[in-house]
Length: 131
Image (cartoon, rainbow, N blue to C red; front, side):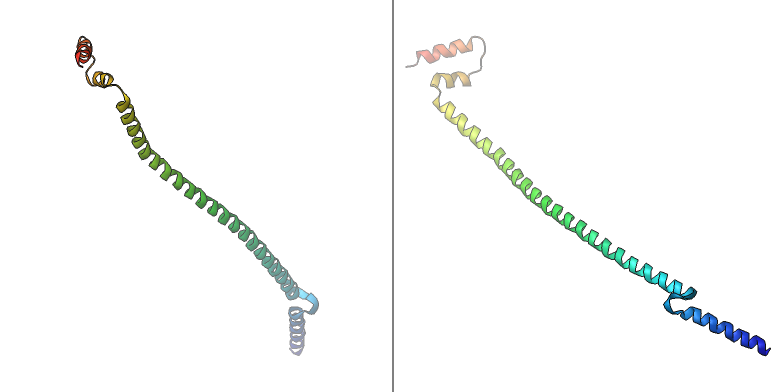
């Protein structure tokens, strides 16, 4: 039994030294090195990803500001078209009143009388008789 204990103690010492393994020797040292390398790679990937997201975010901000400018321009155009539709009514009405005022009384009278057979001639005769 004494031999078994000494062999067990030697085996345990060997295993502990493997686990503590300086300079990356042993299974534990290998795993520590792998995890350390993976962690460094993961941090580098995280930084790279953050930089890419920051660039994409900046692009979206520029696109958003452009769309805000376009929305403002479209609102301005919409207001102008609405104002134009109300202004056209006034312009056409004023022009028609001016044109009608410049017409001769005969033209105005004929415009008011329906154009039916015989009535136009009668209207012209009646209008012609007036001084």
